[in-house]
Image 1: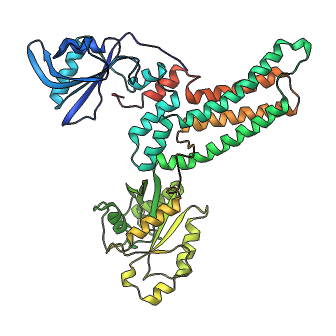
Image 2: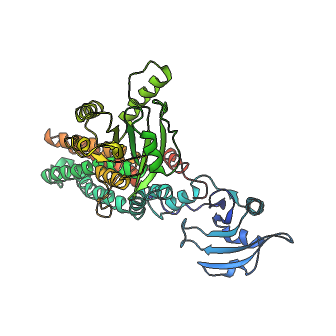
Image 3: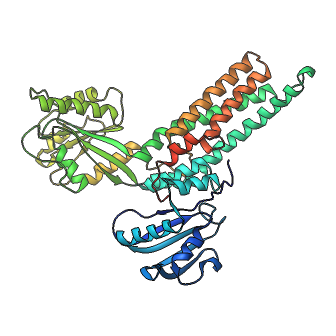
Length: 459
């Protein structure tokens, strides 16, 4: 970890979302954050006040009062960036915010780059790189599970797992390196069988972490859920009912939906990205045929399929054949019978052979809660205790874990072939390097720029 790279300049940015609101927060960080603010603040002398205090006063440009504000002081190292930090809470007028920003820039602050506050926090040792990335995930979280996973990672859950693995490897690497200093004496400080056992153990943990990414990606980005079926099965009606708005055009004319329509809702803490698609049928209409082609593309990209059918128009055998055709990879699929309000009890009974069948009336909104619950159970995330599981949600971390695993494979091969200590040590160092990339023990300027430029400006 790189520690205490305190900057000589003081940065400033608006920390709240753009647009008019009740208040806006302007954040400064750096050695002159308090003195610059004090220069334009009329109230108590901020340079003599204690850390973690709030002060009422006015911001003035010479004798002109720009706004009444609250100023919060956080003195380094007891702040988010470990530098002096000031947060000015002013009224949320865009004009007022810009006037105050221009005044602070005139008195020596500079505009912050995207993610620069969090980048300074990382460089100053506030937290490691994986935790810093979790800050961005926390800001972007839009469901209970994505919030919970991001919060756990920001508090160091994933980092502790990686550091523990790295620490065990470092011990053996140092023992092998020590052997190289006594090369002529043929001594062995690192027990090769213990090292092999450790490598296999670490690889097992890495496999579990990599496996968790499938779930982690769903938690972070939502469940791509495609609604498919024949024209006029009620797909658009169902989407509108789920979203509680008239998102899709509903018509009795088959083939109204010719492109996909996408929106998302949160069900039991899980975000579902619903995609309404063109109806599946043979057609000579070129535009409609293109819509059907895109439907098949969306199917291949989905994590969950809702196959919706009009129960009054088809047989159970036809439905089963379509389910088998649409889902050769056996991904989670939910068969949903629509228009049950128009079906006889005998017709409903005929579909008992369809496994896990759900029945609804999209037009009347009947049994939609049962459908939602069925979707949650199909994804099987609702019972996942993220507090007890380390879950990988970041593709960069997956890449580093894969590189670590490959390097450890080379260590095992080297041990099996009786390779010299220096070659085994080189492979261990590769594994350590890849693990270090995750938490930031190993960094480059390009890596940091790539990560932090994806943050919002005021974070």
